[in-house]
Length: 209
Ligand SMILES: [Cu+2]
Image (tube, rainbow, N blue to C red; front, side, top):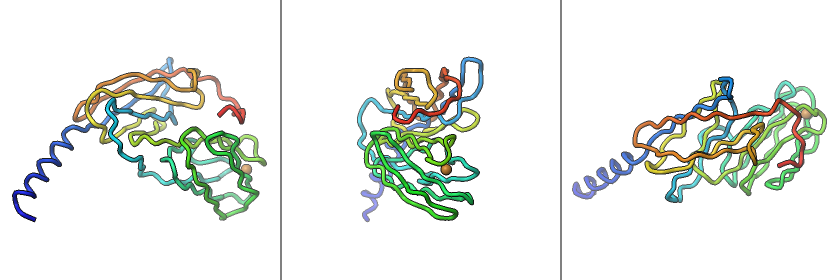
């Protein structure tokens, strides 16, 4: 490569990098408790056309009669593994329009895989264990992250400029379980704090997603 070409490429890289920033989000209830498992999506005002691709495992484990994680963000088209680490069998299903499926009873150390070709929210259940509940959040937006136990999420590499922060939580009282607010993403770090009203813990009514 000619030095001049390399120089221009480095300049381009710097100018691109300088126009992106990280968004630190903190989600809490009105009485100050952190909200875990909220899905935060930063949607830049100008469409960037980047494909969604996430670094965490595309996997929902069944362990101690529960799904882990409770909320999993996956890109449209993802193949998700459902390994069973329990000594009992599970029968995983979803009635959600974004993906209706059923994994017939399967036992310890077995795994199954399901594709999620449509964006939307997929509520998971188990036919054997009524209390098992989890959500797969299928998205085509690349700038998404989930809040941790401290209510914090970081969305990295977001193009600087005006954007909308969309926050979804399965127990949010807002219409569609989501709230939105506009923000300006600066190069470097932008912080966003959002209060969310949650309804009391309850069993998921399948078919509501
Ligand atoms: Cu089960």
